[in-house]
Length: 429
Image (cartoon, rainbow, N blue to C red; front, side, top):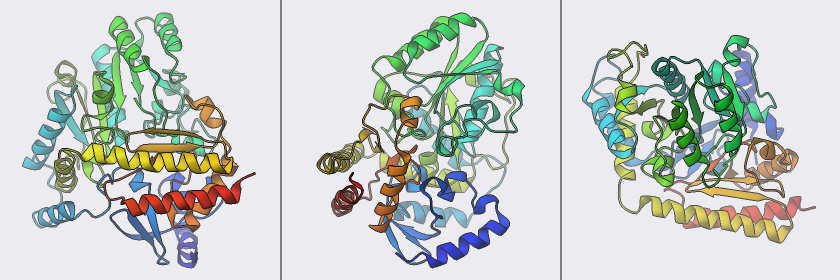
């Protein structure tokens, strides 16, 4: 596999950008190589600057549920681009996408558009604090909610990849108001709430964590969080930036039947363009300016490009049978990977919810951050490189989710399973 042009570009990029990238995991340090530079994409495939073709299971880290450059989305974007890309004023497009979100997500009465998932979680936390007049929040180890100061404490994703759970530059006064607890451990939450009664504003959680790999919530965990929040007057925030419109049309809250007070969205609702949103119960959302005293604003919020891509994406996802198709494709792939590992004697713990999946290189169940961190990252690195050679593009980190799209064909899945068999055979002990 020739990557000469990518290597040359990476050297140039390092002169102008920290580490040569604009987001840490893209640097490929966790897998011991330099990154590929992507030139174009179509359907389930991406193509690098050297002309290599890959079946893509990153999907821009989740948004490309339809596949890349879907003709309906691209056509709509071309049309709206001719009318203007940003006005800093209300448009019918933001009203339409807001309507679609409110009708789809069970817990959302009102929604505010922003420009990223990080901005959504930051704003939701501020709103929860303003609504409750409390300062402290609870988050869970390995759950990544963007690079907000108060939330970048024992985070997953890039922080987990590089073994840096906290970041310099975060004042102690910020971090001290964040209580970090183990995911799937309801007892620790109960003790924290009882031990700090009246001071906890919110619990924020990825209902299905995807930034330490896909972790499945234990039966009763999410329901228990809802009950404890009710008992202690705490705002429950679901970070569905990844799972919103990915797991089902109504997100993880629809799948599990647990309603949060606030929901954070991103990725899919922008169809691949920069976007975020947060919404929830009317009583809470009416505390946001201009109706209430909690301030939040954004110059590019609700811009026509992101709104258009989101509208067209949700139109397609609302069609009957879409999520059944995604489920079937994802199960074929996951089962093929499990069988290949078993035959090669490679110890893995495979997790999947809907079209999100992770292959953990460990022989113990992965139900929290501690277990995820026990995975063999050296084997993962070899696995990643061997799969790349076979034309399979995976996230360059053990601590990430992979994604199946509607564009993946039966042939793509078969090729991926066969590549996995070959890969596992080559790295088998």
